[in-house]
Image 1 (spheres, rainbow, N blue to C red):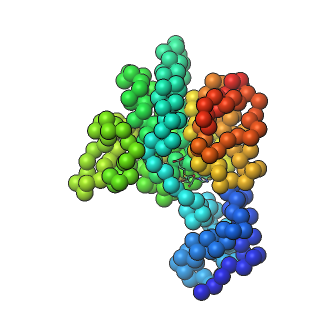
Image 2 (image 1 turned 60 degrees about the horizontal axis):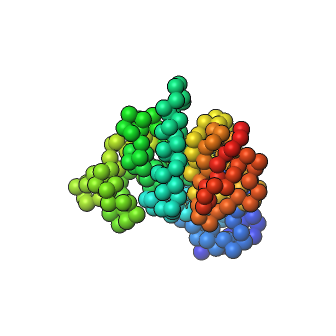
Image 3 (image 1 turned 90 degrees about the horizontal axis):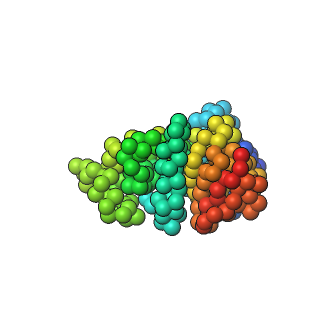
Length: 274
Ligand SMILES: C[S@@+](CC[C@H](N)C(=O)[O-])C[C@H]1O[C@@H](n2cnc3c(N)ncnc32)[C@H](O)[C@@H]1O
């Protein structure tokens, strides 16, 4: 069995950071080599330098392959329930009132780093439960992740019952369909609100400015370097409408929020000015 040398680790770490923002500390060398070894075997390679050259040449597909190896997609329905209450109690009603204005553009939410779909589907179910039906059709939820494997699973929208413990019982009855194998599929009504796509958060600067009412980017930037985190916060801030909300994971906070971004609830920030 071959090991990853210092120089091989540095090459791969630098490439991963440059492409994804994810910083791997020295302590992650064994983890990285263990996660990548099956890939080397699949390519009949015997050292990590050849693998590095190969993934670079693959472009986006190489980045996706590395992302699948280094990211963790841990997620759940209704994760961080306190924040979900804030979404249903404050954010969605305010978005619905905005839609009542004449010629107001449709309401848009973004689950950035959505993993296997539990977060955006929870949002869709919260919209359907909170907003009057005629307005709910004007809500759109974009759900993006770097990992093609995660997005494929999210699009399938099928979950084992053991994954549904966080779902409130009324939502379980209303928005899931029992499949022949006993798993549950997200109902067409909830699916219709969500569009999934593979997208790197490092490209968020290209997102149309001021286009989202609310962005959830939870438990994604914890793996980023400080530089990548700052850049992503700036990009996400730019993607929010004035008055829009940015939600992070419970252990995440923005140390120096850009001017115009106000802390309003646990790990929730609101854009007060353009
Ligand atoms: C721990 S999961 C969080 C999922 C969900 N947001 C939640 O809180 O339950 C982190 C996700 O971030 C994604 N991710 C990591 N770096 C990313 C990047 N640069 N661009 C887009 N997604 C990224 C990973 O693929 C993974 O699915």
